[in-house]
Every structure is written in C-alpha cells, then in structure tokens.
Image (cartoon, rainbow, N blue to C red; front, side, top):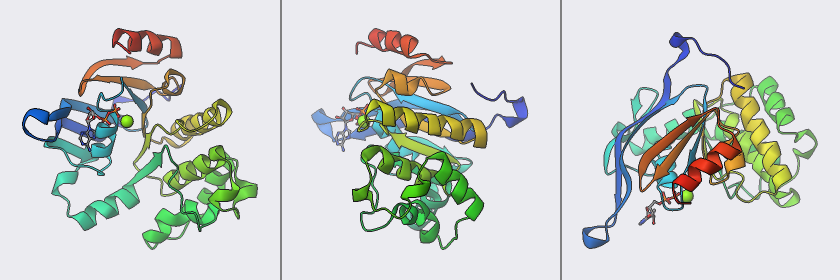
Length: 250
Ligand code: ADP
Ligand code: MG
C-alpha cells in the first residue's frame, strides 16, 4: 500500500534523461544503456527488472554516481551529477544517497553500530539518538549493536547495511540485488523494512532485482531489455511480474 500523493507532492528524487552508456569501442562496443529517460518519483519504491545483461546495474550505478554516462544526464534532485567535481560527488553520495549492495560491504573491524553511523562520522556529523534508535529497532538489531560483521548472519549483516543506508535520511536509497545472497526468511525481513521505510518515512528507494517476489514489494516496476525501458507496471504482484518477464524472453 502506498501513500496517496497530491500533485504538489509529486517531484522527481532523481531523473535520467537520454541516458546512454557504451562499454568498449569499435566492433566490440556494448550499448549497456540506450537513450533511457525516466523520473524516479520521491517517496516511491521503484524496482528495476530485466534479463541478465539488460543494463540494470549500469543504470543503478550511473544514477548513484558510481559510474558515468557516455551521453545524457543524471539528476539527483536538481543536481546534475556530471557537473560535480570528484570531491563534491563524494559529498553528494555520502550525504544525499544511501547504498545497499548484494555483498553487504560492511567494515569488518567495526561493530554493527559503528558501521551504521559510519556515513555520518565520515561527514563529521553525529547521529540523532532518536533516529538511530528508531532505525536500529526497525531492523531488529538492538541486541546486536556491539557485534562485528563476522559475528552476524548474512541476514543480520544486510540489515546493518540497510540501517547504514537510512541513517543519513538520504534523498534516495539505491539497492542492487539486496536480497541476492539471503535466504527467503531474511529476504522477507529486509524487504518489509524497505517497504516500511517508504510507507512511514517517505523514503525513496530504487532497487535492482531479478526476483519477482522482491520486486512485488515495490510501488512501480521498470522492465529493461537491451538497455532500454520496455515496460512499466504499477501495483505489481509477483504473478504479474513473472508474466511480464516471460514476455521479455526470460
Ligand atoms: P544487468 O545488471 O542487467 O545484468 P549490466 O548493467 O551489468 O546488466 O550490463 C549491461 C551490459 O553491459 C552487458 O552486456 C554487460 O556485459 C555490459 N557491461 C557491464 N559492465 C561492463 C564493463 N565494465 N565493461 C564492459 N561491458 C560491461
Ligand atoms: Mg546486475
């Protein structure tokens, strides 16, 4: 269920305009993104699906400032990321974006709590204790805060990563196959947390997944094939998503 938005609430948290990404050159050029334009509405949970090699990760990485387009634009809010210096891009990523990767990417020598607040510390900021407590409670890690990643299960580590992604109250959280390494129970917990972040805090989330059940937690699903948007779905169900994927030859 998503919150009904009045027209004045509808704004793009991020946009891609004519996004094209080429890898390689000459005969071996791969067109990973081919003139993609899309608006990621604020407060909406968007899933990106498509067959392997369709450009999902490339789109996410370019949106998140981890890779650059060959042509076209990425805007975060009204900021054109291509116009930022490396330093300003680092600050934008740290303060305005959150990331969840398939492989957690936690710092092994830090405790769960230290990992969660790391983006704030790197920016010279302190955690708001009430918000930290709320995020920690939402991911169910209150009694694991002193543990290092090696002392946590995969599902717990991914929930630490999710808490870390939300601690700065970022404009957008980007997730690339966040449930890819999790069992179904841990996947469900993580997806419920992401859904709750959208419904209760108005979080904007963009998640790449190849799992129809994971994508069904989103408000909107974008289907890519050969670097192009070929379909969109709102109020998705796993069944409808699977049908759409069959139509894409997956
Ligand atoms: P997906 O995440 O949907 O599986 P990707 O975005 O990873 O797809 O890849 C899209 C296309 O770009 C694929 O053909 C892939 O082989 C190619 N590609 C991705 N990254 C690179 C790279 N660093 N160098 C060359 N080709 C790449
Ligand atoms: Mg990928």
